[in-house]
Image 1: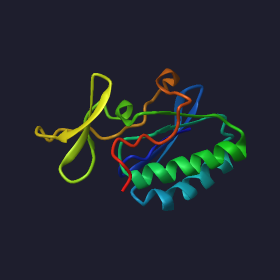
Image 2: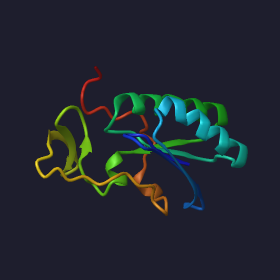
Image 3: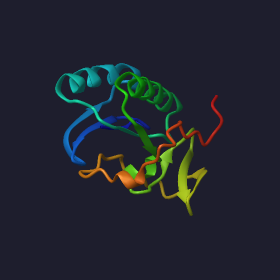
Length: 146
């Protein structure tokens, strides 16, 4: 299962043999929508691995997602993997704070204005490329938490 909760909408994908077999989308706050979505998923599927976009993006959404997934990791005894959010939006800028955006340049994440005002929405991949994920799964905070 894969979660992308860096901005609205929240995206959750269920994968079998690395292929997307079901997906969920919510414009509600992550703290409200994750329990509802997981209730449906856990009634229908057995989770073997958890994957998520660990940042950058909404601090609160990242924190809530990490705590929720870390709790599931412990309760279900399944591994948790993560990668940065640029994997799910074609490496386009990710909204930060005010008129600032996160960009990925030469492997580094930098903060600057999006003068072209161009960005791509987050999307769940049809095929989950596990090579893009790592066991380093703590939230990715580019800015200090406020």
